[in-house]
Image (tube, rainbow, N blue to C red):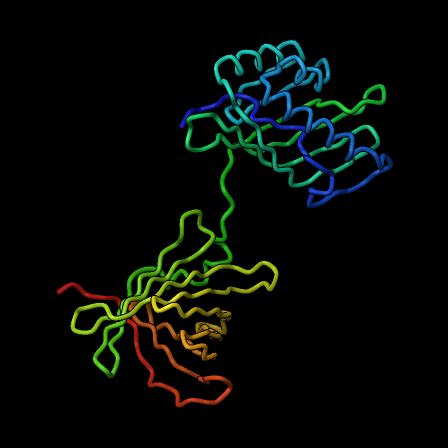
Length: 301
């Protein structure tokens, strides 16, 4: 991937004030709209490679520090910086995702968010976090300062850490002689855990499924969604009580049957988990509970 030491810019952002997730207003009610106009002008000029127009959106003594620590000061120096950048990177596009805009006073505003520069032929964009400082001079909002920092994709590692003991491979033997093999790993990006299950009979797979486990920020709990090889699917809610986890699930089977189940997962050290069925019903009619079974870490023969 090409390294870009330049305004991944920044600033101005806001395609529309309504896109802002948070806004603290002072006395200037028109400020968000005016700053949004700066953002759109910035994005349009960036797409055209128009360094001159971009430079007019900054104060005369503005400064810009990129994520690598390189500082550029002054409107003229910024125009030269962009001119070189556009000459070396034809057809670049800019995306800005504003996370907050704080109107500190009628003459001062601070914006935080992330930016991405998309370069033709490059598989991934160059991304950065930014903090933009706007000032109002002679009735006009301008960029006074931009500070970038390396971008690290957000993850849910903290929220999912309670299930860290589940990671890895597991096996369980059923009374019918089946082997249930599980592999649970973090998904790329760290926002999900993915559980892949295969049921084996005499060493051959007969069924299986995949379950995605995630943090639900609206319900403030862990939830999961499962998809079976035969087309069945379901969802579940996970709750911890001490060292035991309770999983309440609802499944739609291939024939349309609605299956509801409550299970408890009781870890025993690092190498064993007992699964108990506390309740089981099909189309609201109770079913006999299956026997407990134990998952263990597989051992090599």
